[in-house]
Amino acid sequence: MKILVVGSGGREHALCWGIAKSPLCDGLYCAPGNAGIAAVAECLPIAADDKTGLIAACEKYEIDFVVIGPDAQLEQGLADAVRELELPCFGPNRDAAEIEWSKGFMKDLCARQGVPTAAYQRFTDVDAACAYVREKNKESGGAPIVVKADGLAAGKGVTVARTVNEALAAIDAAMTGHAFGDAGNAVVIEEFMEGEEVSFFVLCDGETAQFFTTAQDHKAVGDGDKGPNTGGMGAYSPSPIVGEALRIQIMNEIILPTLDGLREMGRPFSGILYAGLMMTKSGPRVIEFNARFGDPETQVMVPRLKSDLLALLYGCAKGMLDVIDIEWYDVAALTVVMATKGYPGSYGKGSVIKGLDRADAVDDAMVFHAGTKAEPDGTLTANGGRVLCITAIGANVAEAQQRAYQAVDLIDWPEGFCRRDIGWRAIGK
Ligand code: AMP
Ligand code: GLY
Image (cartoon, rainbow, N blue to C red):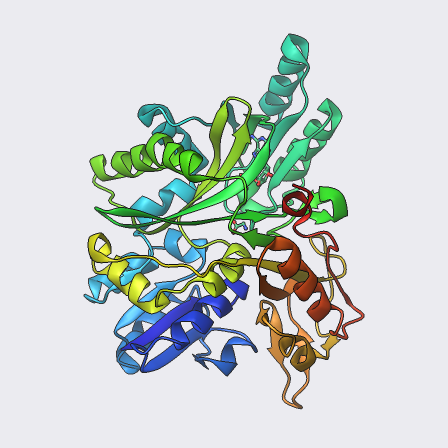
């Protein structure tokens, strides 16, 4: 079959890499893709948010199956539009994806279904938001407390404020300074949850849900998890802290009630549900739900997958998950994100990257591209914040880490940086 993957990040590179290996794949297109994706798929110069262009491409290239990577396209109803063409699509419709794009919807659903999550309040008025933080401070000590822009902000709209002043500054930056554009017109102020974070992935075809796997992400920009949050600076999979008993507890107490709630609302979820969980002293609690694959988590899940990725995604889209088995290699995978200096703040574009072939040649290592661009003269340049995801597999996280950094060290990119401690928690255990 002919497949169109929508998106241009490291996640989409990993998806294309996995799909291209499938014997079911007779043609793979990616819109718009990136310089790395171009090695495994034909990149179409259509922006991910050009719904009309993408729908026209489905007809022009006789696409049989569409896989949607990013959340923004789910919010824009791309899956609905593809299904209107009677094409199978991986990714939920806009109404089911609301679990990701609206914090309020997600919190109400959790409350109705008894799914544990942090207490929160939403504000559209900057003074009211600040007054709430000051009030909390009188009651119980106002910090730590979490301030979030209420819209999609590429993982950067969240401040875990350690002090009241930091919380007030974050409210001001989002609401008055428009640091996250319109996403900050409203803020959510949330109870702080203490613990280790896990990304928990479940495939669902609208009826049947199947556990996929787990991963752990490093959100903060700096070593030791210091500095502002990013879209993710590295990850490993599987999570060593989610054993069989915890996995069953999470499915029963969090995932299944959530999927049931969506189904009861007439919004069955078809695609991958990604629960961001905090493992607190009182058990797992939801930080957020995403309606798509994680980035960079996908870069550490796909290389571990023994099953045919395309068959899985297509089976999910066709409502056949009840007859599909998911198999994994018994390995750990780890990815190190290389970003342009300045990220997650402002950064330049166009710096030259060399040495990727050497990095790719390291045993059991692979380079997934995120924000890269192939220039007309053949050089590769940085074209975004998160630029490369250097991934490796190994018998355990420590071995995968050693190989990933061996590959990182072969890359010649003075304008790039990465964390040097991806996987530290798992390796310390
Ligand atoms: P989100 O975009 O909601 O996933 O938040 C981004 C990151 O902020 C999460 O991955 C956590 O590290 C942190 N975070 C968000 N909400 C909370 C919370 N209520 N308590 C503690 N940390 C949080
Ligand atoms: N790794 C975080 C995300 O994909 O949202």
